[in-house]
Length: 199
Picture 1: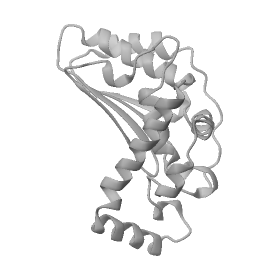
Picture 2: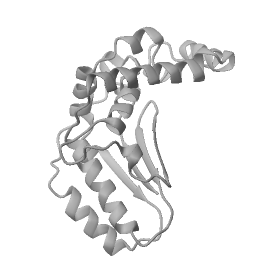
Picture 3: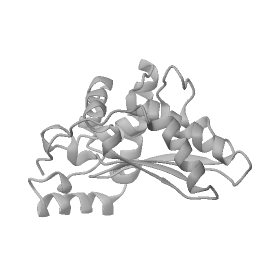
Picture 4: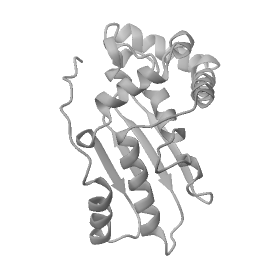
């Protein structure tokens, strides 16, 4: 299992307002393109699984695949892919719209049609009225409709940097091999200053 965790979630969105931007960016990262990686992350391992998650304070990208002789090459492919994603991404306008619609569908499934989840969100808002932790990570249908690739790229530029990311690998791979993979794929990425978190 390979996991990349970015220490940025909805609580880091502009003006301390959870609009669903961090969650939207999670989707764009997984389906966006780079010159060196023209395929989406979901198509890497047909016999495995790929997914992402977003919370108030972090965003994660997870890939699982069966044990096999090519595991080290598969890990190198993943590290190279996410090294590129830390630099940036491109996405076709129609794909960006589709992913925004997927984010809205997820909101409807998790919150819109679930009275217990809606009650929990309202309770959070009462308990933490002026804090992003009292807001829904996914935003609202109104804020989701306003999300743009430009705002996602601005959020990416601020938070998606090597010194704000953790990688976790679990499986049958040696530390030495893993260190070699990391050195080859991540060594050219610069760190950058992170803004102070107002919350």
